[in-house]
Amino acid sequence: MRSLLATAGAFVALACAPAVQAGDKANRAEYPVFTGAYEPEDVDERGLWESFDEVERKVATSKDLIRDEGINQYMKDVLCRSVGDDRCNATRIYVVRNNAFNASMAPNGMMMVNSGLLLRMRNEAELASVLGHEFSHFEQRHSLQLFKRLRSGSDIASIVSVVVGVPLGAFFLLDVFSFNRDMEKEADVASADYLAASPYASRAAADIWVRLIDEDDARAEERKRRKRGRSTGWFASHPAPLARSEYLARATAEHADDGDYGFERYGETMDPYLLTFFEDQLQRNDFAASKFILDQMGGDQWRPIHYVMQGELYRKRGLPRDLVTAEEAYRTAIEAGSTRPEAWRGLGLTLMRARNREQGAEALATYLELAPDAPDAPMMQMMIKGS
Amino acid sequence: MMNFLMKSAAALALASTLVAAPAEARWRLVEAGDERKVARSKLVVTAPEDWNRATERPTSRSEIWTTEGTQLTELMFYAKIKDGETLFKRRQRKRNPLPEFSPDMLPTDLVEWYEDTANIVLGGSLFEIVEVQPATLGGYPGVHFRYSYTGGDNVARLGEVRAAIIDEKLYLISFEAPKIYYFDRYITGVRAMMDNARFE
Image 1 (cartoon, each protein chain N blue to C red):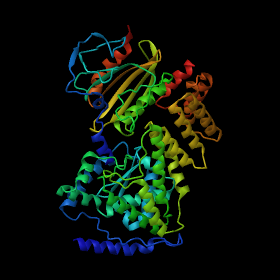
Image 2: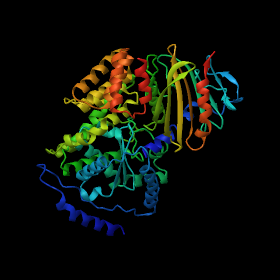
Image 3: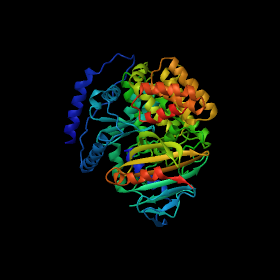
Image 4: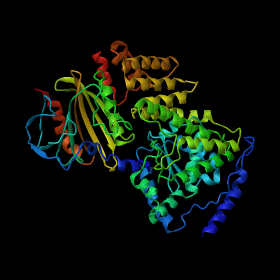
């Protein structure tokens, strides 16, 4: 059964090869040979697939799922461009509203991508590398290996990681089964190979981990705790981000290519969602890291939406000096042409809190014109009247 | 998946994070019509029907009541929360710090503050504000809001909160219960209790 499927898979891979557009970057590598065995093969794997099918049914009806066709089709397209058309069709991607930086892969081909991850990617090539990483857990059947090891009871660390759900590398990262460190490295290297064979720029992969370290440094400083991510504790199931960025940079240096980053495509697709995703991040009471994410997102090309986010960031912390910064940010966004109701809401509330009630009421009135059905409309009307 | 793992390791519902040691908590009957001062303050409420109050306090500034167990009906009173304090006990100060109360918060800021606290405790963006209305508490202007969420036990819950800042301190009454049956069964009495709360 196995060999038959594998042969069929190889045939599909060969048949599809001409469909992959070559020549869009100068020195594009070949995809690794695709064995294509995506059906569960033995009792273990069938059982594992079935239990995850059940989980997938729950995920598919979850209210945290983002169902818009546009973003879902986009994710699929990026995965296909990253790992090749023959591979990508074996998976289903679910985009979930969750502010943690994470993506996960189940053995039955269900991939979950958190909105918190999408908030932190700067371009399509970075997203492609993460999706490729998750995909290779699936292709290399890491959860099956882990499951077998768990059952034989010999690998204490993997039992612990499944039962306790250790936050990986202490970055709140938690893959499906908490794949172990070697598996994570294997997946990283495989995703570097995919990226080299894809139209994307290979070096995008290493950038993600450098930023993750910087983000956590910012958080650590604010919370007055030790900085992490530079070394791998024995308990950690992912390699330390610093180690990851280093070996990924080495791997991608081998494929020194001039591929595409897809800045614009990524920006256009994510723009309608970014404010919501950023609001979710702000709920974590995580000012320094949120500011870091915003600065990275805006780079040297701040658009009106970024100023609205800046306003929200400072208004929520709400120190007297923060209210000054917030007011300025909202006004900049509005002057630059933002028509988002959130800009007026934020400006109005900031002014009110700074006891500039008259102007605050005016801004809130504009907010209500733009969003008459907002859940907080009755409260806003009361605040306008009371001013 | 991460959600499922995280949730099972973390909070099933807000209630489970509040009750410090249920095994040690003792319950005392509050009979229908009884007037009681709550949460060591001068805020007086009238029980609309028979309720039970816990003798153990989740924090020194709060008090918990229930009729059928806190997972099914949870009525919380918070009083005199001061500048810089948090709604719940700070359990993970470094990893998941809770947002602090500030007396210059607007009514809408209170709603966001409650929402953020709940989301941090529940671990995600599960908590959703459904409606925000102006209201009074003990004769002082404040806010009344409704929310919904589904916790790690996969039970959909609804909740309502009445809150006001009085003399720079926060007073807050919250009620939550499963959407199926329990919420509707008790909410009318709870709203009346919020409306009639007074300061001695």
